[in-house]
Image 1 (spheres, rainbow, N blue to C red):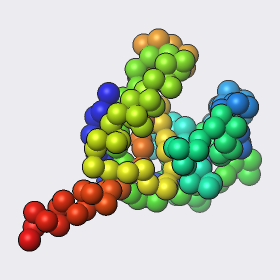
Image 2 (image 1 turned 180 degrees about the horizontal axis):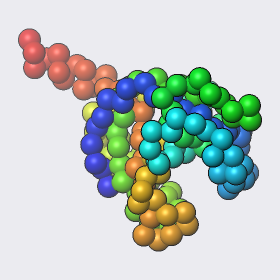
Image 3 (image 1 turned 180 degrees about the vertical axis):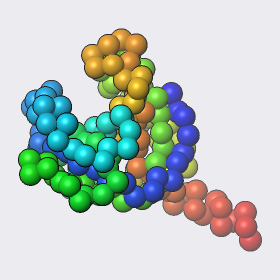
Length: 172
């Protein structure tokens, strides 16, 4: 499930967004709107799409509820914003450190992947959750609603205080 830790460079995206919660999930509506107008986006360097979530205020795992509101984006990466379609929004994803995981299977099993990431991997990793967007990269192996689908899950991280102290002690 865990693939790697990666320093992601800044990326530019164009797409659509909707505010929602898990209790009032509008993901299907968002992606239908986006896919209907996807062909209006020029300068797409590849075929990968991005399902991105912004938590404002930042994600607090201790207090997260099904009614917690977040903004979800359906996006395609672009080289620049020179030809932004009127019905789309631009989004700049700042560079930063991410833990990258592989989710295999139907979307119904996605909560199990998140349970592993936040319940097992993150607490024992030497990292903590950073306050930047979370996203899934939907590449060539992604198959909507299929049990053999694959997608990369990118979780923003930073070294936690224990890891920083541990590294400092070793370097002295």
